[in-house]
Amino acid sequence: MSLREINFDGIVGPSHNYAGLSLGNIASASHKGEPSYPRAAALQGLAKMRGNMALGLAQGFLLPLPRPNTALGDHLGLDDSAPAQLRAALWSASSMWTANAATVSPAPDTADGRCHLTPANLVTMLHRAQEWRDTKAQLDLAFADTAHFAVHDAIPPSFGDEGAANHMRFCESHDAPGVEVFVYGRPGGPFPARQHEQASRAVARLHQLNPQRCVFIEQNPEAIAAGAFHNDVVAVANERVLFAHQRAFADQPAAYEAIRRAFPALEVIEVPEEAVSLEEAIRTYLFNGQLVTLPGSEMALVVPSECRDSPSVWQFCERMAAGNGPIRRIVPVDVRQSMANGGGPACLRLRVVADPAHVDPRFLLDEKRATLIERVVSETWPERIDPSDLGTAALADKVNAARLALLSVLSLNELA
Ligand code: SUG
Image (cartoon, rainbow, N blue to C red; front, side):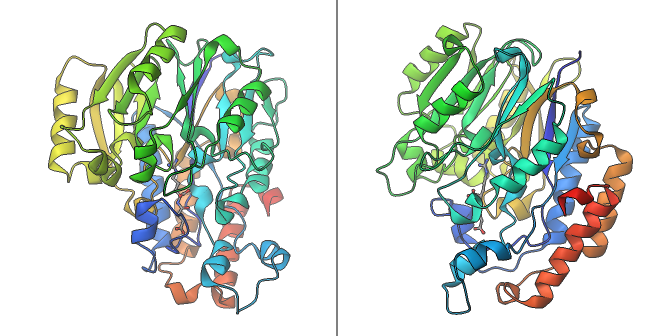
């Protein structure tokens, strides 16, 4: 069995728009009401996937969910008199951020030796709470091999679970047993704390993790208040490395100590406030880089191109790559359409450590599928959506047809 990390990126859906739905997500709020460019957004995401494949990484994808979600509208009795924000939720393409699709515990960490996946309930925000059943339908297909995978139902409300965005795994190599770290927020600040401690603990139990190899850490309330609505906006982990902002956790020394007790080989790269302020880290999404192990075992950090445009962030990155630390390459990528809704390179991917031979190949990217997807996106994804287009029958028809065309070329019609 050859286990490796596969990044499953969310293909940006044809209804991608800026409705400002996420309280506490500064980018989402500040781009509210702007026109969006779904075709460009999806092509940016595909270019990132291609770039990562060219680095020698394994790449998969998840499909856009059915939008507009008319069943949800009916359930809420929505009509034209309902608030625009409520109506816009039905159109959200937010499933593109697959770091929130599920929490994943690879086979070496679990008591039954299977890889466990729990879709995130995302209960804090209506536009995201509608995702999980459709997400689960895809996980059930992609990871249908029950000898190797267990796909659970989401944790019931009211425990808020936002998935892998608040989960870090430390290990000597991806195929070795890991220590899983769950980061939660406490309510009481100006913005919602979207990951609840009890949801994280439930996921750890469901996944049959060894309690000695689980760590639960509180996110810094200052970070949530500054716009880090998920931990992956201020910290990212890969193998033995934790790359984090100095103000990521409520008690930073205690957090490092707790991880080190379970995983003595921990190597922390902390970015001090004086080098990059918390605000600048959140604006540029430095920590939402994809920290990946390249073939040959060097690490690269795939960052949003906004990082290159920030003098303080870029200076830090260049120094880091030139130093003796484990992160030797910085790879900027343009995912600006997603960034404007608060989603960087790492938000757009779900990491699954598995043998690719055990995954349904229809969800794995290769040159042929990349070309097919690009063709459908170029031919059918709306070029531009203005806020006034949301709710129109014309856009609904276009968005539905585009998604169905994609399912059809990928032979995934059972998701229609
Ligand atoms: O949940 N944005 C997403 C961004 C998710 C980023 N994911 C990670 N950090 N892993 C969110 O806030 C914006 C939708 C809108 O405003 O229309 C939105 O949902």
